Length: 136
Image: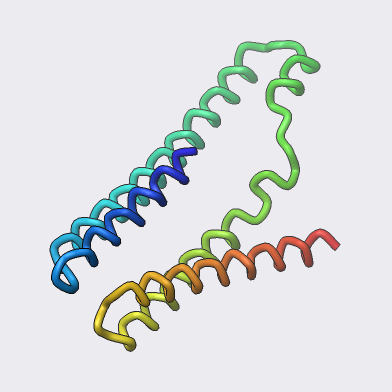
């Protein structure tokens, strides 16, 4: 739900930036700064989650809780985090390719967002195809 709200908010900001007399550089810079801050905060939250999960697992093991309870608590899904590095590579490569295309198709306008959306969607498609191929 949060991703949908964020996407809708960014979309409205872009429309507001283009609604005036042409392109408004300040609104674009503010939107980009907000997006970068959200990405950094998401990374920090994911990192803290991993650290806290590790500490919890260590405390459970140190307390000497019976094995059947520990195994039910610490049970992980095998495919949950299996290809996380490949996923991030695909996403960042798609963003990089999109930014490269946007740079060479100046001036910045609504087509820049279309290029970014298309390149990111292609990177997700590549990741999906990779996971389907890896399951075989």
